[in-house]
Length: 82
Image (cartoon, rainbow, N blue to C red; front, top):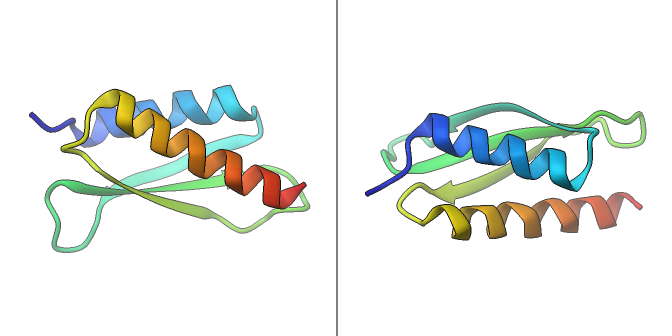
């Protein structure tokens, strides 16, 4: 059973807050032509990093797998921003 779009957005917001309070989920949407693939648009609310970050996830993955993927991508992004 796949997670709903709202579930993925909620998970993304939770993981973002855990990693850095300046991270904000702007939106989560189905990727064009895909019913089970979601793209999550985030931003880091700091002047040093005004560009958004897009993370794609399969909603068929489990909650733990999605959390891990999001955590890894966000940590990588934060490390690059120094």
